[in-house]
Image (cartoon, rainbow, N blue to C red; front, side, top):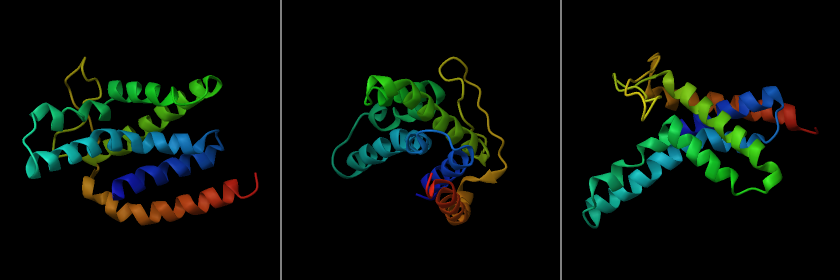
Length: 158
């Protein structure tokens, strides 16, 4: 949960500082990689452990949604839910939020696992590994307060 708050707060700070259009769509883009990759895996994992055995691909097959190629697919499908005149802007705002998500995630250390940024064309991984993934717990509240303050300042009557 702290990771979603951190991603969302950073997105609010970025979008509010630029006064760009569609801030809600941009923020949605920052949380979508985790929601699309982790939530189905957790739900199906629960079903696998507690209700009935499922094939491994059903529980682990969501990881590409947290990689660039899967993100492009999700952004495209998301843009189709909007009217035609807004689709291009929605697509690029979702992609921008997802790119910010990957940038923020790349600062975490995943003990050598890294991110498959070139999947499925390149199998190498990448990360800056400057902090542990648990650091999002400590960053969540200050970032959320900063985002709230920035959004209140920027969008108060504009």
